[in-house]
Image (cartoon, rainbow, N blue to C red; front, side, top):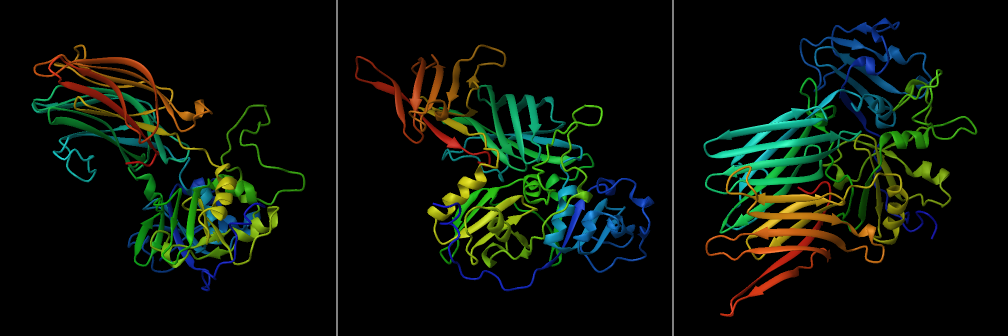
Amino acid sequence: MNLFRALLIALPALSTSLPAVEIVSWKAPVDDLVPEPFHAPGVIRLPYPPEECVFFQPGDELWDIRPLFADSEMNKQLQIEWIIWDARSGRVTAKGEMSDLWKIHQRLRGQDQPSHIRLTLSLYEVPPDQSRPVISSKPAATVSWLTDSDEFEVEAADPFYLLGATGTALLDDTNTVTSVKISTRSWLGDQQPMTVDTAFDLETGGSRWFARDLLDGKGMDLVLSSKAELIDGTPTDQITLVQHGNDAVSVSDEFKSTRFQLPDGRWVHALPFPLDVFANLIETKPAGKGMDDPFAATSDGASEWRPVGDFLKKQFPKLASIAPPDDLRATIPYDLLDFRPWLQQHTPSAIEESSFIAYDPLGERVIAISNDQNDGLDEFDRYFSTLDDPETPHILVTLTGNGKTQLVGISGLTASISRTSKLGQEPERLMEISPTFGDANPANPGLTELGLNYRSGPSDNRPSFSIKSKLQLEPGQPLEIMGSSGSDGSGSGIRLECEMLDTDTH
């Protein structure tokens, strides 16, 4: 099957409206755009805003920086109505079509600005129905701290709880995923102290429930939340804002990577697609010149990282602005870039004129719509998913039969959860897991190989258990790993099961 042939089948027209004029604002130093901007000819301070706008307030210090582009190659393509620097708010705000604004967004979206990670560790008491923690509910205790993508150590305590953590946290290049290696210690009321050691990823701005231990009807849950902030305290999801009616809205990541059906029966598929990759893909280059090497050598031979290069000298084809379908307007209240004509010209397969493929430069995702859930979108997925870094898969291991113990981990690393009578003593109750995911075993790609070390007890009126073993687990399939019985016929058993999780699982 030719690339996209099944995907790009005839669809009804999705929009007949003219391209929308957007107002987009970025929290960014103006010299991120060009060096020494106020020395450029024609840059002046404005006595009043160019028009009413949610980003302008009385007392603003507004500068017209449109002349910065006067002598650039980009100026031949950049058709924006105005672009203003507000010294009070520290924001660059521009008005134009998305077909032009995305080029400014590539430079100002904040990836190079210094930032912190704000982590919050929350301790919950397991509810009577044993449901997972509701992140919006009030925890029994929390501790929150800032870290600069480095090691941390925190602790908070009072007579009724203790909650502490050590470890490392690292933001990815796009500030969208936080990778954490963490060791926690906690106790609550009359419960035994609990210690957890594990590692996982979570979406920046999201939360992950990662540990539970329940025994005799009492237990504790742990949840970690992550937010990225600029050094002035601005959340990174507020760097880029879009005017929508009378509001300033942030870019939604509600469906960064997903497939779902619209009310009219058509299927939407979205995949992450980094803006720098998109720009390098469509950039008009001299004949014979391929993709730029991001680690190009400087004149003295040193290697220098250039994430966007001298973007004012870059030339791009004009991709028209296109409105998203009405059913997506609540999530994407701005125009996208029509990706279909470029693909039609540069891919080997023919692209039907009525199909819909668009690129969202603010959300950094490519979106396709097809009448067919399978063949059409599978071709799309195979092409674009090869251009995106895969997510780190996670596993949730659940052990039952002697209370309930649950722990999140990742392949290749050992994670553990334990209970003691007092902090610092040898564990009276321990579950240690060492998962290896199915890609390490091509013959059984759906299986997880799990090294397990579990022990519990002895204690009053409760049997003791101890097992060390290596097992093959299939997600969603419980496995009895140990059983025992006495002369009186009484018996008990230990069961284990696993569930695969994504980075965005809360």
